Structures are given as structure tokens and as C-alpha cells.
Image 1: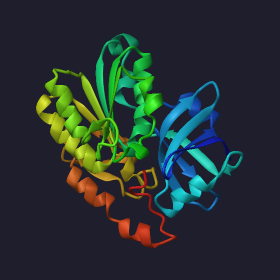
Image 2: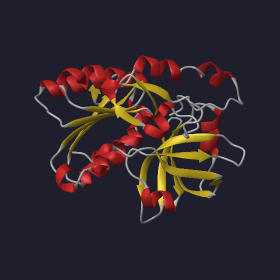
Image 3: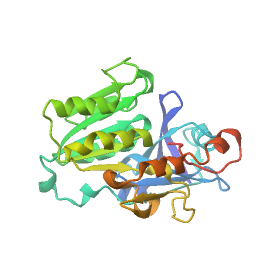
Amino acid sequence: MNRIIEKKLLAQNIYLIRVEAPRIAASALPGQFLVVINDPKGERIPLTISDYDKEAGTVDMVIQQIGVSTRLLCSRNVGECYASVLGPLGVPSDFVKMSDEELRGRRYLFVAGGVGTAPVYPQAKYLHEKGAVVDVIIGAKTKDLLIFEEAMSKVCTNLYVCTDDGSYGFNGLVTKKIEDLLSQGKTYDQAVAIGPMIMMKFVTRTLQPSGIPLTVSLNTLMVDATGMCGACRVTVGGKTRFACVEGPEFDAYQVDFDEAMRRQGMYNNEKVTSHTHKCKIGRE
């Protein structure tokens, strides 16, 4: 049992939930995820780690209420417990293998869309603490849907906020902001994009001519997070890979995004119409 010690509404239907999980916090690294089970008979819900505190023994996750299962997770209150929180799972971000000396001064660009901003935060924080130069673009449809703006501003060199409707910050899509930065002569050693699949696809198209290496996180494809269900199969470099056990991060230029989006949308109708459907695809 994992007790909830903090619950915060970040935006409409988007909650940050902090749970006691000392063993997970002690070994968690950027890029990894959790599996949360609401009650003993509940389904397994993969959720990316949005922060962790090794000393306090806590981990944070951001949950957007979309389907029945995410509503159940968000209905829990401080003091209540989830049946189980498992992790850390998945392969950590590649940069954790690099030494502090290698990371110092290295230039990173993060592109975060919607709730994808949450898993970007621990990566930006880790790199900032290592002395890397970290620029972050956060995109949202409107100002009211922005999350982590204040927290992110403290762990990056430059923060650029974009809204599709122009209600706040840069007026336009994150791809337009990328083009704007590159036109200013900005250069990066590595880029990372986390957000909706369609956003990551077009970020990939935008950055590819620049030659900047780009990593994307395919966490939204995961269902059981063990590799057994096969729902997170994706073609990367012409080979079948499993996002939950071999990822969730992959070389963006090798990902077949069209196939991934078809797979992601397979159960959308069932998710909306059924109150018993047990699929997590597209919930984050």
C-alpha cells in the first residue's frame, strides 16, 4: 500500500499526486515510469515519474482524468492509499550514463506538450544540476492548460511557453518556436520531445534537417508495462520494439509515427463508451 501525502490540481482535470514510495525514490532515474494499481482488483496504469525525492522517500506523478481508470486514481485523497505503486520501470534516459564532466556545458533542448511537461521536469532538473545548458519549450492549447511553468523555470536556462490560441506566451505551435530558435542561431547537442504523438511526429520533422539528435518518449503506448500484451509494439529503425521494456525513449528519426498513432487509437471508442474497459492507451 502506498499512501498519498499530497494532491494538487494543476489544471482542469490534471492532478499532481505525491505518494510514499521510499524504495522507488531511492533508485528512480529520469525517463523511468511507474505502474499504479488503484485497488487489489484494479488495472495496471503506467504513469511516468514527474519527480522523486530520495531523502523524503516520495515520488510524484501527474494524472490527467480522461477515462474511468484515471478518474478513479484521481478520486483518491490525501491519507488514502493505492493498492500498489511499482517501479521504477523502463530504461532511464541515455544521459544518465554520462559523467558530470561530459554533461557540464552540454546544450539540451526539451520540447514538452501538454501533460508531457511532467516527465520533462525530472530530466531538465537532473541536467541543470549537472551544469548542462537546458532550454525548454512548453506547449499547451490555452493558458489554462499549462502546467509546471514555475517549477520548470527554476531548472532550466531558458523557458519558452507557447499556446496554440495565443492566450499566453508565444502565439503558435511548439514547432514554430523551434524554427524561431534555430533561426536565431541557437544550437543544441541533443533534443528531447515528450507529448502527444502527433506533436512528437511534427517536432521530428521540424528538427530533422538541423541534424540535432532527437529522442522521443513513447510512454502513451504502454498498457500492462511488462511486454506481454504487445500493445506498445512500435517499429523503430525497421525493427519491432516494445516501449515498456525497451523504452520508453527512442531515437525519433527511427520511429514509425504513423504506425504508432494507429496503434494508439485502436481502443479510443471502447475507452469512451465502456465503463469497464481496461485499456490505458492515450490516457497520459
